[in-house]
Amino acid sequence: MLSRTADHLFWMARYMERAENTARMLDVNYQASLVPQSTDAAENGWRGLLGISELTADYVEHHGAVTPRAVIDYMVSDAENGSSIRNCLRAARENARAVRGTLTTEVWETQNQTWLEFQRMVAEGEFERDPAGGFEWVKFRSHLSRGVTVGTMLQDEAFHFLRIGSFLERADNTARLLDVKFHAVASEFHGAAPGKDIEVDFYHWSNILRSVSAFEVYRKVYRNVIRPEKVAELLILRPDMPRSLAACMHEVVTNLKMVANEQSAETLRRAGRLQSDLQYGRIDEILATGLHAYLTQFLDRVGTLGVGISRDFLVPVAA
Image (tube, rainbow, N blue to C red; front, side, top):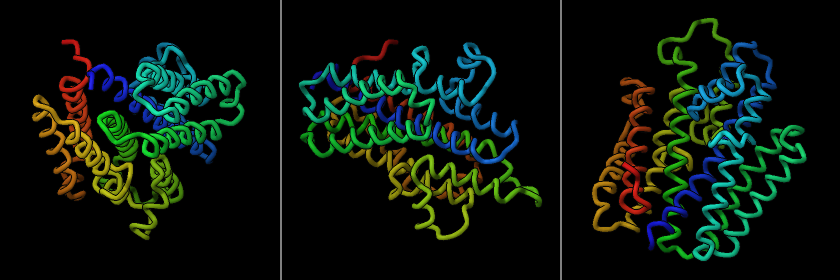
């Protein structure tokens, strides 16, 4: 396969996954804003969302004060924000258009219709009238895109590059979400105060789980109250949890093996080692050494892996 074709497929999948993850984080913050809370707590939630995407400085420069409406507009439809849902869906569609002949008709039409429908929704103010409904629509379109890909495409190199893009992006976003949300309640791992508000605590952790569609999964697996160390274990080490770091890296390694070439041995080794660390890791050891340090290192390794994949398979990365 031509490296440019592989590049378009890889990034098409990444941008669609990124749009979904952005919608998930916005939805959780929006739902949390409907629960009675202090002004500082509400603002910290929206600041945390910007921090996950490393957009705090850019947002403040262009919009100043952090308000729910301004953050939603910035993350949904701002053309100047490269990580907005608008730009992610547009980039996914443009990458799909560039390799239209490689995709099935159903995959192309799904990408194209998603972009056209999104433009209509923004123009008619649907995200302003019903933000939650808009976020659900973005998530549904991402699910549809993956489902159509699995259901209609030949499982050849094109398919494998799409899967690599999807799961590498998902691993990155899950790690960022965990890092920011756990950092906001770091006292959980250093002894919480006796008078801690249990109800607020429940909403915080349940919102984290809902942001990755894991609330019902948590109840099924652990069958007890929501505890932060169990949330971390579920989203980092459980291979049967679809959005966990372990599950994502399993998919990345599996698909990398299918497209391996003469120069990808080091990239595959790095991916395999990262998968192995997750496969045989223990949550008590991770928490003992520091969750923030662990997730920061994980994000660095995923970033290095992305560079390696680009170097070995895709359009060469500029030095």
